[in-house]
Image (tube, rainbow, N blue to C red; front, side):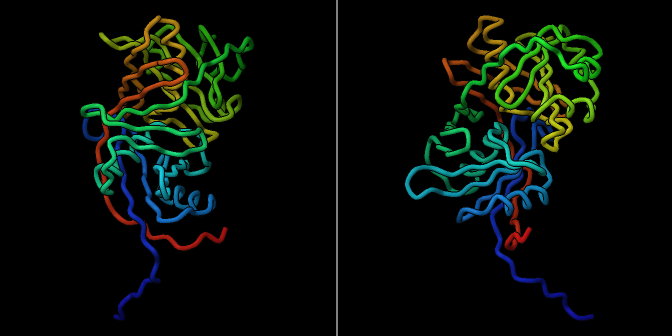
Length: 278
């Protein structure tokens, strides 16, 4: 049989990183693709669909100050993603030879920073104060099986507060109901049910192509404000109670939220991709 000759394609370093982990096969996997020049949004979206993780981060080195960073789900570009930013910082420090003690990312949500915090990576993100919404959507009440204690909206997501962490843990995703009243996604949260745990949450985002996200850094920019004000605490411990689970340390300081989590490399390789013609 003749040898199969593949088309010669440009390759890019690629990493799959589990972010906000408590051990193997926990946290939220994110793709990290490092490119040597800016790519079109269509190309990055096609790559993210091919990778098929909740988020894929794309990094391009700037001439003088840090990195350009963009995030894509398999179906849309998003304005902010915490776990994929943790993954990006991890890949740069662990595998790409980055030596800076602190990293700067230029993004659609402004300048974001990452620094080392012992075994964790610490992110500096903008706070997302939620505003109470008087009318609870009927689809939300159907999804929850009851009226939430409190319902509000942040920049991209809505949040429903329940009385019981067990209720949060036992919810079953329902894409049709959640998509009916959300622009991006729904955060469901309740008080923590373990010693030292301030809050429990889950995140459903079918309109972003994610029925349920494993661990979501960006939603905690909203949760840190809500629970920080409700509990009167600037420092919080949070658990996202997905199947994989993830635990974050949060600190609320004025209009910033500092999120810290552990990361772990799951896979290293090369991504081969030609030009996008879609």
